[in-house]
Every structure is written in structure tokens, then in C-alpha cells.
Length: 240
Image: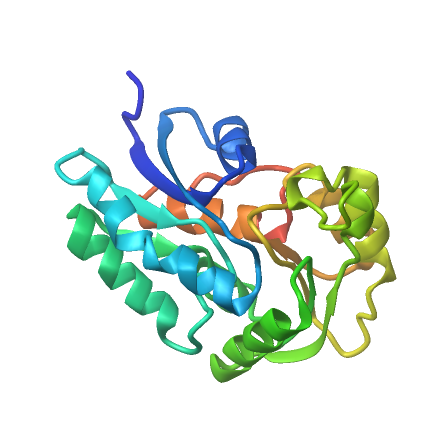
């Protein structure tokens, strides 16, 4: 029976990689439905336009039997600062009638579960969005030792890199180049990146626990649904 352990609704910007990853890596008996939001881009202005569509999109799940509805966008769910992830959850729950979760909430839960204090962050975002993310993490009690944006321009012909075109080699090179001095955890931010396949290699190479947006979101969603399975090769987080 499909969804006998958990039925989860996804709301994500336009890309199929979250669905692909979750269907592959989620335990047997967990299923996902999906809705998309138009994504103008990762600037603060674009993210606010993205979030303005959240409640109407969540309402499409009204009266559908789900255990959880996720807003799967890291920067979008934190763009208005500390507490905004909880506001997004309230919007989801009000509109859908189901429990809600956001990726930034999941990341905070993952950092807490790993007893993290100091985190190094790698993103594909512009500087102004990185500044908001840094403040969000620090206002929630985690010191950001560094936050750096990858150069995504080589991933498309028009100079505007699409996040889902970043392959494993590109991501691993950028992860290994990040300065981890003083950090006890590494966070690769963005649901638009394909990251589940590289977590084990990056964690072994860097020597600190690795969190990615996909991994943290899936881990937290499963835990909120009472599915406490461990998943091998997906980092220390999934062994908790």
C-alpha cells in the first residue's frame, strides 16, 4: 500500500530534483505529492515573490490526506529573518489543514540534533541573500564561521547558472574549497542543488558532519511523521 507509513506533500520552486531525491532515498512506505511555485530568482525580491504564492499553493492540498506539507526552499523560508520559517508553517497549516514544515526549520533542527555550534555555509545565492541567511542562522543561535557563494555562471550560456545543472564534481570541488576553520559543521544550502549523492564523500573528506537542504528536509520530515529509520551513506545526521 502506497503511503502506509507517511504521505507527504511538497511545495518547491520549479525543479524536479527534490522529488527525484525523496522518492529514491525515503524508506519504503513513504510517498510524496508535489506542487510547484514560480521562482523569479534567489534575490531577496525574487524570494519574496516566491513566498507570496505559498498559501495559495498549500491550499491545493486542502482535504487531501497528508501527514505533512513541506515548503522546500531554504532561502525562501528564511528571507524575512528569524521566526519567518514558523510564519511559513502557520500559512501552510492554515491553508492546507495539514501539519507544516519548511527547509530552514529542518536545517535548524538538524544543527541542533548534531549539537552544532559553529557552521560553515556554501550556497549558490547572491551576496544579499547570503547576508540574510547568515543573520537567520546567527539569530537562531548558530555562529556562521564563513558563508560563501559558488560561481554558477558557467552552468548556462546566458551567465545565469541554473542550480540543478550543478553536477557532483562541481559541487564536491566547491565543498572542498570552502574554509572550514573554526567550524564544527558544514552546510550546503539550497533545495535546487542535487546533493544526496555526495554527502558521504564530502563528509569523509571534510571530517565534520555535513548538512544539505535535501538531506535535512527529508530527515526532519520523516521524524515529524514518526518515521525514524536510519539511512546509510547520507551523513551522520541520518544515523541519529
